[in-house]
Image (cartoon, rainbow, N blue to C red; front, side, top):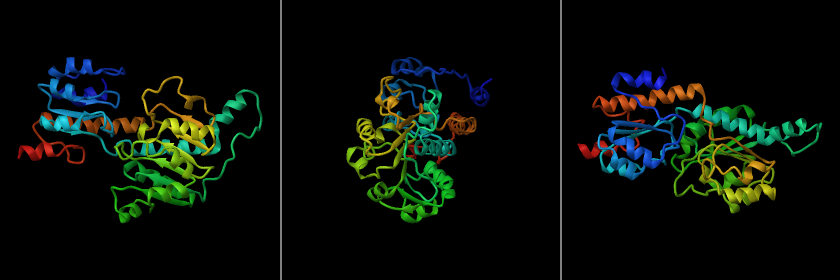
Length: 314
């Protein structure tokens, strides 16, 4: 029995969709019979899907980002939307650090050359992380964990986060700066911000040209934070030294995506937050919200993304 079934079956029938992405028409067809829905980032919970949920009491996200859920539409019909903040923060921060190491030292490229028979062929002009300047864009749960991991390198840790005042950023282990300063002064930049209209294509041609030529960019947040076409150009022209990406503008990316063939791009398939412990935490957080709502209670405020649902009921 899966952990999901173990946690939820005492409260009703559990239907699992498997690993395949559910299309909008699939959700619309099934949702009239569901009291709760637990979705990943693959499913799009649109206004049409929500409108079809005549019995729906909650939309729970298996993870953190909720940009695939139409929260205003859910709020309009009184349906709470929850997520699992912090559940995979350690996993994502560790994956970001792994991408930083891989980019700075050119590990995948060297492995490929060795398999081809080359020996001690220098591919990248590497630098040491110790004493370097690290820039973290968005120092929420993941950014804070990354800052903790980076302290051992005895360098500067800069952070830009418009949602936190400078004292809170300092308390999370970083020096508060504006985005331009972070871009110009960092040897390594790691993105951990939410996807909003303001952060869409935050990193594009102009910002790449502000970065140090030896710097690397890591993105474990959301793909559209980076202008992917501009990034390809910056990597080809060696405006920046490298990039490590766990996310893409379009997911899944096209198999002919030029990033897959660039020697200074390291890519992984949006699995930075995927560890056994992270999944276990997510299961418990997500099912806690579902169980509370099915019992007629409010979700934990920490997990609730549209508290106005309950304010409107008062």
